[in-house]
Amino acid sequence: MRLTPSKLLISTLTLAAVAIWTNVWLESSQKEQVSDIAATLKEATWQFSETQIWRPGIETESNTLNFTAGQIRYQQNRELSHIDQLVLVDFRQNSLNLISSQVAVLDPQFNITLSQNVRFSHYAQQDETPAWQQQIQLTGEQFTYNNPQRRLTSSQPVTITQLYAVTEAGSLSADLTNGEWLFSDGVKGTIQPQTMAKDDK
Amino acid sequence: EERPSESQEPIKISADRLLVNEKQGVSRYQGNVLVNQGSLQLQGEQIEIVHPGNQLQKIEILGKPARFQRVDASTQNLTRGEAEKIIYQADKDILTFIGNARVEENGKHQISGSKLVYDLQKQTLQAQSDSQKQNRVEVILVPEQKNK
Image 1: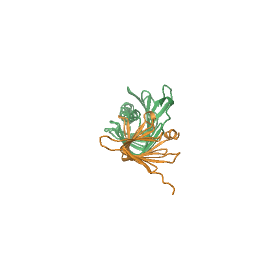
Image 2 (image 1 turned 60 degrees about the horizontal axis):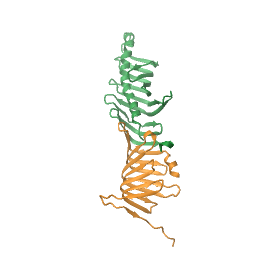
Image 3 (image 1 turned 135 degrees about the vertical axis):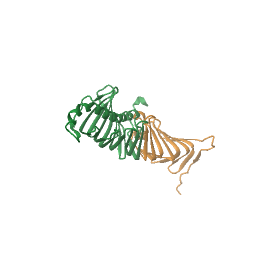
Image 4 (image 1 turned 180 degrees about the horizontal axis):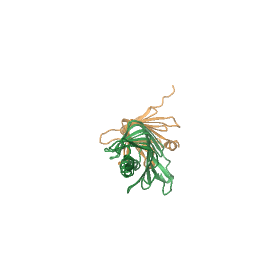
């Protein structure tokens, strides 16, 4: 099965966005929070419950990041450590990337471990119609994103779903810089060839 | 004709690994690769599938040897083949066997050479020798057993 390169690449850019987003979001939101909370709490883990920050989050020239989270925890030293029910949407020109997981745990280098019902999905608009169609989706139970090395790995089974193909593999190791994805420990795929339109023959 | 409907059947693949290189736009299945589509079966060490815009264009199998097998639904003829490389071209429904190629039909007729071209639609087989290596085409036809 040939994974459509551009689409998978866009999906993985979203991962880099996660690291940037956490960094940028922390900077932008720290100033509002720190002043009133820090004065009263000594050893504190700040928790936001039922957070719905779906306002236009972080605007950059190429994309807009929005997210919602069930619960966000970060340490007093302002390190974002834990996000429950993360849904991150990365809007680009006429495509949309989405990452979601039950749990996302971050470390100071913004390495991220996403676990429980993890989804990376890429959607594209259908020739000028408002309809968005999912082009490719990578799912599994746990993924680790190494930010400095820009590597995405999973030691657990993963599934890639495309419009006409589904592939399952026992593990994944991806080098996002070079765009090399190695699915190992047994791979099973099904491709549904599409009937060629008469004039294509 | 039976083949066109078969060529629209799902292609099932299994392998040890799948390596996708986005920049080259290539996906390679490696290690104990098995491909099934209808009665068509292909086996080898590495397989590369090219299907731009989800139109199956080509399947290329490398193996020691790469193997092919197919049962013709109407005649129940089993055709088997092997070579160092097997290329399946979807648009023409043609299999090309390259390097120590051998195709055998129903365990009887056998043809070998450096390159064999098998047309799945017309059920024809064309053999080519390799002029440099003097690897000649060899055909073995086994006569039908006469009832005593």
